[in-house]
Image 1 (cartoon, rainbow, N blue to C red):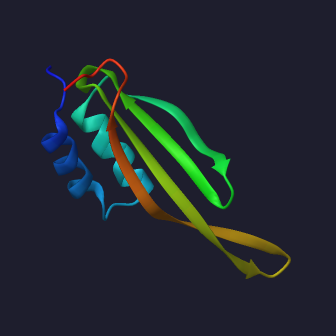
Image 2 (cartoon, helix red, strand yellow):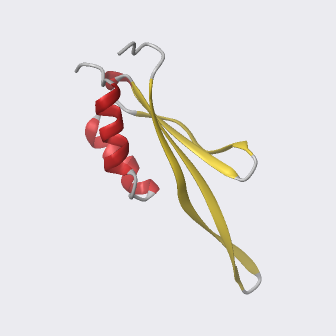
Image 3 (cartoon, rainbow, N blue to C red):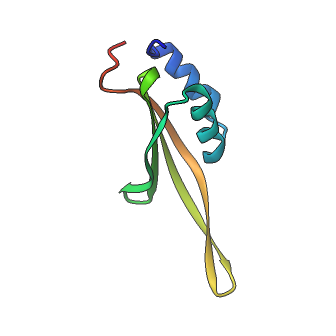
Length: 96
């Protein structure tokens, strides 16, 4: 398949902006069967958890920034993750 250009990447970002992280994973795997997970909920900025999918055959990287809210559930806290930002950018070998 051909690499995605800027307009196609922007369209992809619009399509996945209201999805949950698991729905985004399914969307990415559906678009590119060879997509791979680069990292999952990796902390590179304070207060933000990052997940990145690399779609090699489309020349695109999808990065999801998540934040979380903690709920007290008796003697433990449960984290509720929510998507704060989605970045769809070209991979280094995509020059379109």
